[in-house]
Length: 104
Image 1: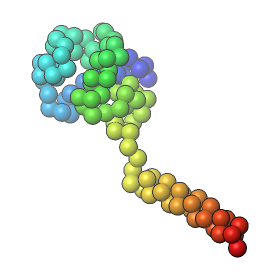
Image 2: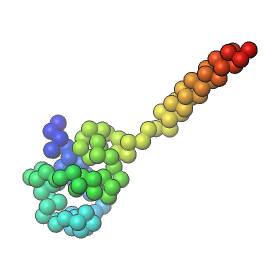
Image 3: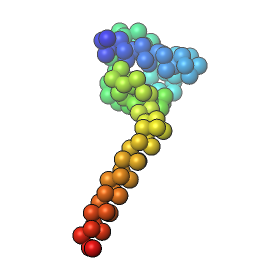
């Protein structure tokens, strides 16, 4: 899928999911409604500053906004966090065991 289309589609979907009109979202983002419409229909491409504003406004990552990730917040699930934590604990336990063996 084309990133331009992905960006414009995602931008529009985020606004709709938030229940915002183009006028309200554009005012909040500091641009005209016409410009937001151009971004949403893919007629214009925004600059990096606008992309950053949109990410902050909708609380999503740039990767999600640009179609590079399907995870809007970039956070891991609790099971992924737990697995990583357990892995780190195992590494620490092994290091502690090795240190105790050296002392003994």
